[in-house]
Image (cartoon, rainbow, N blue to C red; front, top):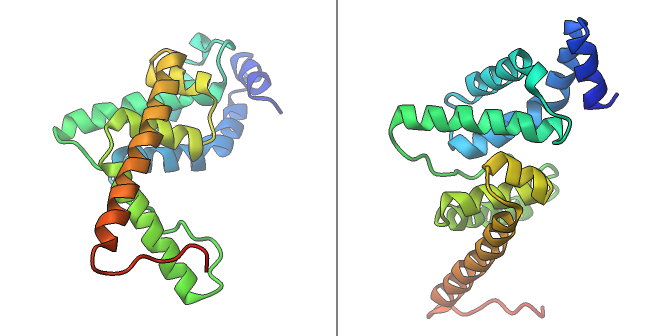
Amino acid sequence: MEDTEIIRQVLAGHHEKFAGLVERYQAPLIHFLRRTLGTDEGVFDCAQEAFLAAYRNLSRYSEEYPFRAWLYTIARNKALDLVRKRRREVPLTPDENLVDHQPMPEEVWLAKEQASMLAEVLSELPEHYRQALYLRFHQELSYEEIAFILEVPISRVKTYLHRGKEKMRQHLERRDIHEGDGQGVVDSTV
């Protein structure tokens, strides 16, 4: 069932139908909040508050935007409130569960090393680049949804993505050069 149909039913008095939206978006929202907050501390409370706020304000939802984008905007605002409350910036941390299939130990190790390096490079980027890249490539949101969530024009989302990818490429190239000094470079043609 489409999100908009569930919302119509909830607004018509079938409040139990909201559980379908929670079930649909709970796992990706929690993952988004983990990446936004950088730790598990407060993630579940933030998600619960976001769903509660969405439920309470469902009558204000506009079908102009996907429900997912609206929910993520609420969750992002809750997360920013929590970060402000902590009064410190929380860096992104690598997700230890990035590898679903673990056929060979060396492949697992390599994947974790690459994920760790990528997370480290991401942590060096400004927050707006990190969030835009995460929402686009991990959550697979459209430019419009990202613009809505980050509360910026679509053109700025495109700029964030372009500049974020370019900065990541530059960081990775610098790492390759520094790691290659005196250690030999891995031949990619092997």
